[in-house]
Length: 283
Ligand SMILES: [Mn+2]
Image 1 (cartoon, protein in one colour):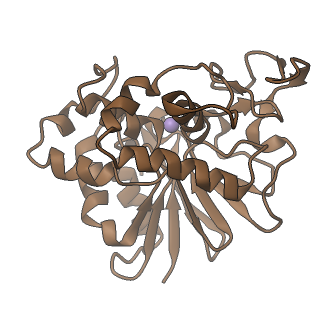
Image 2 (cartoon, helix red, strand yellow):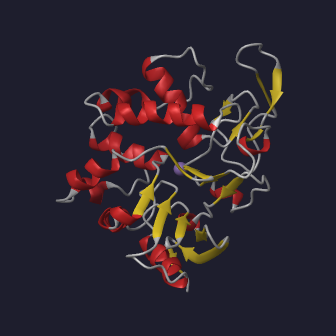
Image 3 (cartoon, protein in one colour):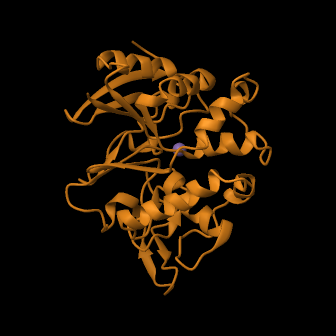
């Protein structure tokens, strides 16, 4: 049994099939992990979601911002955005089944020395803290109050998580870390406007002391992750898979934007890539 982890699909089903074939992925024996953003922007969101759902016993996903957006639109609390390609899911006969499964999925998944999240883990969080915060959001998503969460999920403020936060504000700042973070300060203040390669501002004030602190990619700050433990993440296509931090592995190589889809084989520490154009394989 091997474990394969794929970068952001965003509906790019053919490139996924392409890398799985390269890797000799075995549907029955191997495990497939997905770093989130299974759907949206790309060409085959419905087919990609069905593909993952049908293999759910062998698949582990974490939710990305686009997956949460799909759920928010499905709950009627948000209108589709320009460029969304989720309409075919909302109109599908099996929409309730697919989304009923999707909403049960976690924001963070750990197996032995590897943790998978969509965007990242705040540098000032321990793994245990992060898991607790992820569980809070997951419990809300699984409850009858999920629509309340979706209504308040959007927004860049507050741009940091603080233990004193409560209610939907707290859940929003936790969700922003797990699903949207790229740049932040060491104390966890987020720059949610820049998609890279550089942050919008070189410094941001510490939330408590207001002292300016350097902004950098979340994984470049001092962190609380144990030695030999790795965070596998997606979301950040502009990195093109480049992340020199030994405790972090970037898997979004921008398949939907004309880059490639990356599949990582965990036990063998090797990569498979499928170059793409408009979400379709070039090979
Ligand atoms: Mn994303």
